[in-house]
Length: 192
Image (cartoon, rainbow, N blue to C red; front, top):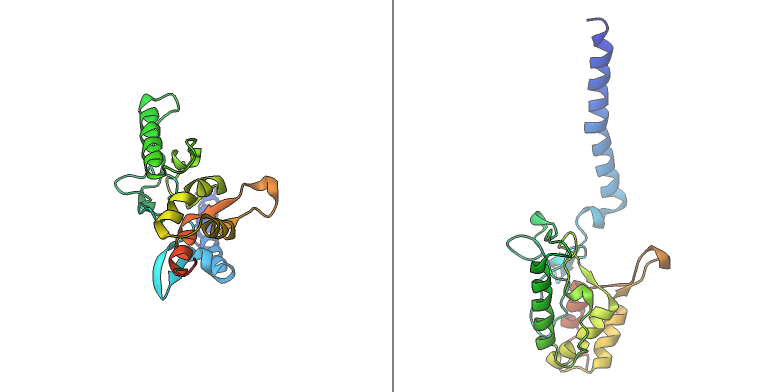
């Protein structure tokens, strides 16, 4: 028993440190240093919660930019069911889904190029992506501009203003936050 006592004490001590003290400390420091991110990076507009900067939303109206498709269960962009479709690139069902998405996007965007950007037809691994490439946003500009009765140049300026570039170029690609862009479109009704 005298040989087990140090092992049991060490187990209890490490459990307390790694299971209690460390998580509590990191949570408190996160709340203190990164309060917005720790709270979910929520976007409020006129004291009303509109969403998170980090989770996509399902925009279907012609006057709104659309994000990547979501493969989450039951409802699109469901954070409690995050995950990909698990369909392999060689799976014929994936080909059918992509073909259907391409056809739907081409029908909804008749003035756009026939070459649909890949991030508008393929879901991410999480199914929750908040952003699209600047090319995917530019591809949707004619539809959004026509639906909102704005010039394409005006909408393109908004897209450019809502394009985030990585601090160091090789660490990522530019991305357009779809929710922030759509909220900016709603907030600027007198853009013409």
